[in-house]
Length: 137
Image 1: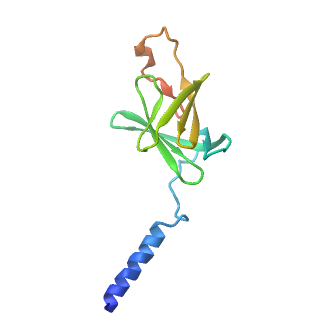
Image 2: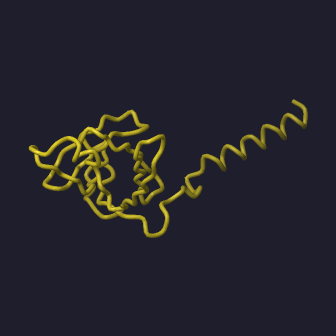
Image 3: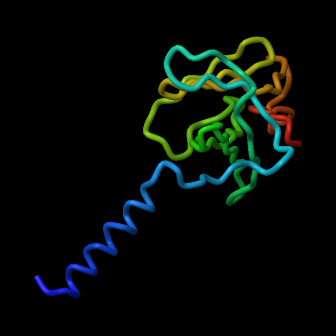
């Protein structure tokens, strides 16, 4: 193997090691972003540890929930009053309502969002913004 090929291989290995490092800073929510209670991983307790970013993308409200370890999950707010759906994950989303709290379970992680709950007798037009209200309004 010539010297140039060895140098290219070493450079590629160095780049991959740096890019795959767990010590690389992950983007986090901006200062003052609202927090929600989350339970991350099997058997963990709920705590106000996750920060939520809200943005409009192609006419849909997208919530990015940032974990303290740098991980995150993205949800899209559903317009049919069902709350939230996982945006880019393969895990199934389970939703339940506990009073005025929307509980979202994805894999071994759970999140508690404030929910806009409407009366069953109210019209659908009044529920257009129903779903998760993480407090970033």
